[in-house]
Image (cartoon, rainbow, N blue to C red):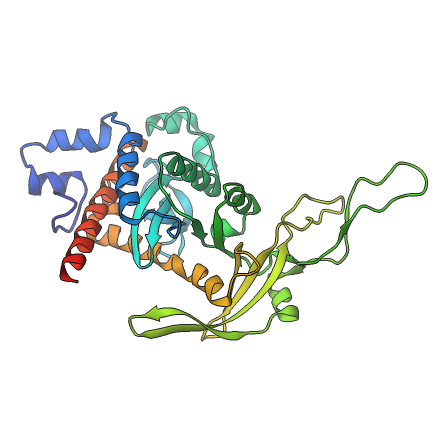
Length: 362
């Protein structure tokens, strides 16, 4: 009730004063300090989300969202990039996962990223009630671990989308492929690519020990250089929006990213084939993506895959502005995850009401 109803602040004290003024201590204990586990409740949320949006055509969008904070004692707080402020700032960072189908979406995961400055300082972690089993994990590993939990619980989705913060990591992309998921991710323009038909050989020596290090027929180029050499921009329309057909300029070519094993000269060998996509924006800027859809995929399908990611940012904004995701004032690990989970449940309730009303109106 406190999260759903109007109110400028949706931390524990203002919520209790509005909806349960006689139970301030109980509400504070329930959210901030009690030991109830989030995992069983998360599984119920995933069951509800799957019933509403799950399926082979659904997408799971991986991103992170920053919660600006002052001080040094709130769990996970550090000077790091904060998407909410679009700069380096003192904040907590949550790895987020959002289930989406068409234009309908529902946040299903929010997990705190702990910087190494925290995981290397056990007394500080103990003060913030961080469980002893929590060690340092990069954001991409947190995302893969959450995907494993969701799939084990029966949440269905066929593909994963992510920005360059995750997509530039070859281990993340390989992890998705090993889970037999399709993916469309942002990458850096400096990431190296090989042509799709690049030859990898292990030369034989006539005398002495046989060579064990393979060689690549041609050196890789950065994504930006590769597009300049092999790409041609074309106008692509990927779907209809509220204001008409959505179109843009894209160069799309097949490549093999240089994210295989490292050769003796320090250059990475070719990885699995994928689509390299370069989007030319109206202001002249360019964005680069990798998509592991098969070679038979149409240009429209490839572009539609990279353009489905915007919904997670809308979800972050709504959870903060409407439901107070960034209003939690406690310091503990469990309290923050309690608040984040309750915020997702409130969002799921509102989304269910919206869809029910839309179906009734139709």
